[in-house]
Amino acid sequence: MIRLINIELFKIVKKPRTYIGFLAIFLIVGALQLAMYFEGEELISIAIQNLENDFRLEGKIINANLLTYILLNSIIIHIPILICLVTGDAIAGEAATGTLRLILQRPFKRSEIYIAKAITGFLYTISLMVFLAGMTYGLGLLLFGTGDLIVLRRGVTVIASDDVTWRFFYAFCSGTLSMIVVASLSMMISSFVNNAIGPIVGTIAILIGLNIIFTLGAPIFKDILPYIFTSHITKWQYFFDFDIDKLVLQQSVLVQFVYILIFNLVGIWNFNRKDILT
Image 1 (spheres, rainbow, N blue to C red):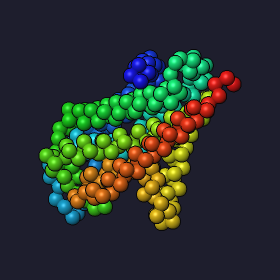
Image 2 (spheres, helix red, strand yellow; image 1 turned 135 degrees about the vertical axis):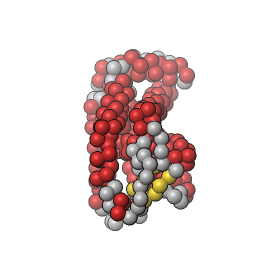
Image 3 (cartoon, one colour; image 1 turned 30 degrees about the horizontal axis):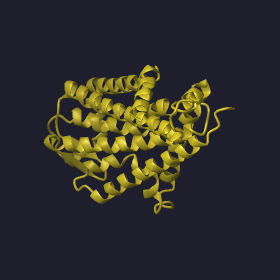
Image 4 (cartoon, rainbow, N blue to C red; image 1 turned 135 degrees about the horizontal axis):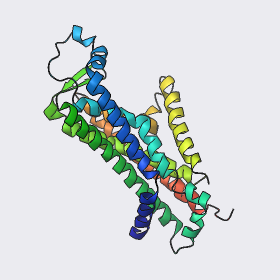
């Protein structure tokens, strides 16, 4: 298994599309933070103008903590696309180029090959999220320094700068778990098609479709909403509540692990019966 994982890691490192995600994060984070550096005061004053009537705000509102919190919201849209560029190509891309036949001729079980590809996809996802965290907080710290964090969610929460680090750590862990669910979904779809575009478009379409359906129809689907994986992508925000609802977060972790297991089991099942001769 270690040998298979090393082979898959070597493939990922050699593919140019692997670095698109890191480049995109670098450009997005850099552009936003530079924009906040030059125009941030005006933008923030517009966003909190209602608060200034009720609260007296002092100190540095724009800081590394605030920028990191804002950029964490990008995992809903940008990061899944970047992940699918790699995980969606893992099986479908090789099927399209014909290299999948060569791989399956080696003395490895199909399930082992799939698991190795999945683990490699998970490692790529984790590395992308670590890069996002380092880039966001590191550049923010360099440009703005640290400070208290103002969170506008279900009211106003002000979190002291010395109480933020552990929250961001668990928030990024929660976000990474959600992205591993996305990677598992992309891998599963990749096992069904022979075109690398299919898993990318299919995964993003599912994410957008489910978000629209369960956002617009939240009152109707409120009973099943906790069991839909897309509703857990933003659960990292709970770590910035004054009173953290641990039960909700524990249930979120459990539901997402179940989805990871289901998506990969379905993927393995289909990969084992996949026709590589046509």
